[in-house]
Length: 274
Image (tube, rainbow, N blue to C red; front, top):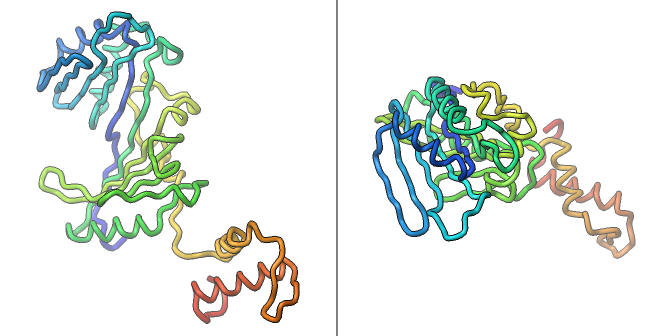
């Protein structure tokens, strides 16, 4: 806490999908109020990069094929959208589509990222904050294989993939507009958004409504319960065990002895609460 100067919380990215049936109407409306930065139209897919009142938006979809597929969709990503941008997108979607939020013809939020930008008094201390997060942050109810580092970015999600499951977390050090900070992104995926009935009709979305910090825990140390669970995991497939002189002993005694061994390894010879 001594390293942090301030924290900024915001919506970092929203990804939506719109049925191909309404793509032409949507594009017509959004292109009227946006500035085209880039546009590509290849044999397989097309792509737009736009600026809407300073907000970056990308839109992509498949190029037309001989057989029209009613299940095809176009995908829209909106980066750092403030309340005004969200309101404007909501109006465009309502004008150009039937406005449904579920089913084959629904306008769907596929992913929504809430960002916590942790700024330090000294830029060099951002790596220390990231190291602390890497060592101590755990997603509640996650399994042991949920953590996956990739270069300087740390991922926490189902099987180490933040796109799987309801929620994923990404943390890394970022440089933007001449400032360095540690960013922690909570990526809420479609299952979470469906469960809580969150749709584009809720625009503008306040990042604090997600209560992101309720989904994590910061472990300072191994607890007694933690050591006990490690021991149980180590002995999960063992029903019986032999002591040092070859006599058969119960699994409960085996677990107790193994727990003491693990405790000594972690804590040394200290006695008392851990």
